[in-house]
Image (cartoon, rainbow, N blue to C red; front, side):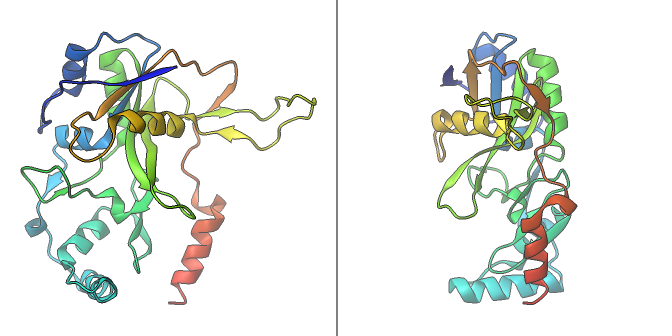
Amino acid sequence: MHVFAVEGLPEIRAGDDIAALVADQVDLRPDDVVCVASTIVSKAEGRQADLDDYEAGERAHSIAERVGELAGEEKDPRFAQAVIDASEELLIDFPIMLAVTPFGHITVNAGIDRSNLPDADLLLLPESPGASAQALHGQLGSRVVVTDTSGRPFRYGQRGVALGWAGLPAARDWRGEHDREGKELTATVQAVVDELAAAANLVTGEGDGGTPVAVVRDWEFGAHEGSEDLFREKEDDIVRRALAAWEGKT
């Protein structure tokens, strides 16, 4: 397997054709996996916003005040309102805003970005990363994963995760296969789109690198059953239920 960043891409703006820009820089193969940062998908889809676009409500003011007291600095309630508006639900709103996005991803601040934005204050996640990935897949003819970075419970640091994908299943389902001792696997489902996103993030990096697209080449899914399940359903998520119970007591 070989992973490389796509060099030479310009600053992406609303209306730009990401597929054409990528195709101009690299000769893609049908079995490549093109990992595209959600930031440039959002920019191309016009998902930028300004804080002045939001009128903070009572809950947003309360969140900003409590978080500001904890941080020892003033927090803008308009940002809290932007997170609320971009969320299906806030699992908790203190000491962080942990949001459920409309497409099922759970992340801090609804994934709203405030960096590398020359023309706006905020960048929202794509409205439907799965549809965005499908469109890019159709244009490029290669497999596509739309990526973001996210923190992890119980660990420091961020890693790449998949928000949308097309041309490949989300996961390898090992259930029913056997280990070297002949024991049947009953629980293992490998989230390959997350692993591909993390591999891409190793070469695209963060900050001012300007390389938001990576290509994974010579990787095969293998002779496994595929699964499209990645985001846990509410009733199947014990952590989400525990957070809801904890939030109700705060």
